Image 1 (cartoon, rainbow, N blue to C red):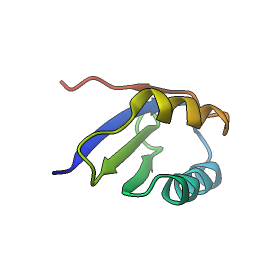
Image 2: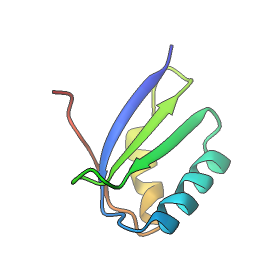
Image 3: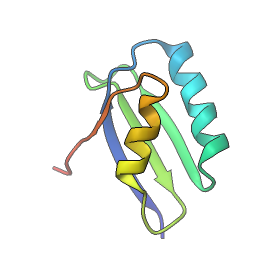
Image 4: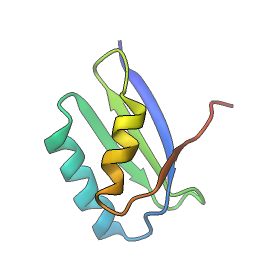
Length: 75
């Protein structure tokens, strides 16, 4: 079962987004990540092949890369 989480971020630069996606893929086995910088929320989507995503741990990890992220609620 896959888990998908969507985050609002402060990432504006495509190069920064690309580097961050590469780091996510290296650091978190089983996570696939992509950004939608055209969205007003600069969305980061994480798809996990595991049952769940360690949200607090992941958000704190992003801070190392000067990325502020908050979970976007399901609507």
